Structures are given as C-alpha cells and as structure tokens.
Length: 96
Image (cartoon, rainbow, N blue to C red):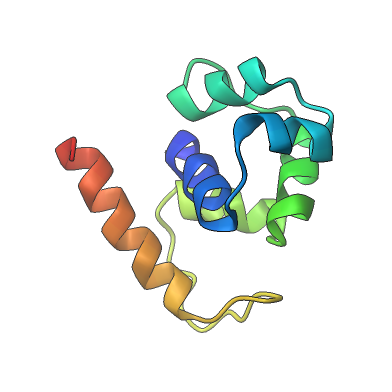
C-alpha cells in the first residue's frame, strides 16, 4: 500500500509532515491524507517525494505493490532497507 511506503520513508528519513511540506511544497495535511490512504499523490507529487526520500518514484510504486526490489542499491541506502520495510509492513498490517 502506497500510504505505508510514504509514511515509512518519511519516518526513516526523520521528517515531520511539516518539514516534508517545506521540502516538497506539498501541504502537510495532504501528506497526511497520502499516508492514511485517503488520496493518492499525482505524478509530480510522487516525484517530489521520491527526490526528498532519495528513492526513484517508480521504486516507491513497486514497493507499494510489494514487488521484490532485492539487489537494487539506492543512493545513500543499503539493501537492508527492503528487509526493514518488510518488517514495517507486517507491523502495520497487524496494527502494531
């Protein structure tokens, strides 16, 4: 689910929604709606978020579809991020 992917990256990058607003120009309340799954970002918004998160927007979408990304090296990240994300998703789905 894209909402979880966006929240995950915001949290691991250490940004508040208001800080992310300043970096992307996307209002904090809209970011909150993305993270709750109420609305989806458009292409330009997703690209802006990906740029700040240092993750290609197509990779964010692939993660949201739960596609395997193992073996892909991301700028400033280790491959461990996929495993951390999988654990995060399991916790979100269980409601922890």
